[in-house]
Length: 357
Image (tube, rainbow, N blue to C red; front, side, top):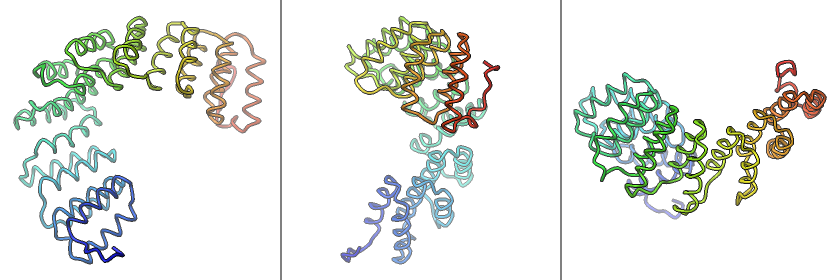
């Protein structure tokens, strides 16, 4: 603008998305001022871009103000406002705007529903989920795989796996992509149906769909909490050998947790030593937690020392090691650890008693 470039609507709607993406709120506000000076605040595409920019910068009051001042709104305006509330963790407000839109006689499109449905997933309330499901069916959007994926996610989070499975089964196999498979697998996994999650995973692979990192995380997590050690190890090896994917920290954490729960701590430690990158606090935390359960002091101390280096101010790590010492009757070591915590200023935050162990 210092180079005397003429500011017009095309320029503005090119700049504002970048401001939102980069969270450059001050630049976005400056553009907003220039928009007013140039009289561009009557252009609908400019106002929609402003709502989007403020939403992505976390400023929903400003976004709503721009939205309310619009003399006219199109479906993009409503969809952008709904999406803004969803992005900022305000599902009830998103649903409120959707209801306003319907009251004004504006018909939603597929993009609107894609933005809205995560709000219902956040609420995890079955009756509203059923209501929006009926609405989507009347509109004829249920055949859209992205809409069906969102509905499966909603029903899964509401605990209605039968409804989720019904929607999944109704779709032709040819349209089922990695995202819808991942959501249905995660749904069964989160509710403790690990065998079904693994079975669906195998069906997905057999159908020719290659699993992604999210799919592997979901099914490994399910195996971990259900104690399906052989299945978990098979999937972990499959990731590395057949799909040629490098496990990430979530995958390593899941497999360490799986082996740890099963008491196979040395095997878990061996996997940690083969990690291509430095183990994270989550990985060491999974091992330490398992050592407490199975009273493996030497390995627990090793995990704890790594955690102390990674998270020197996390009182939970010190407390876990103290519990391990107490569990095997090493009260002096537990007391000494409490003194160490006191020396480095963690005693107050910890607020634990050795008699509680």
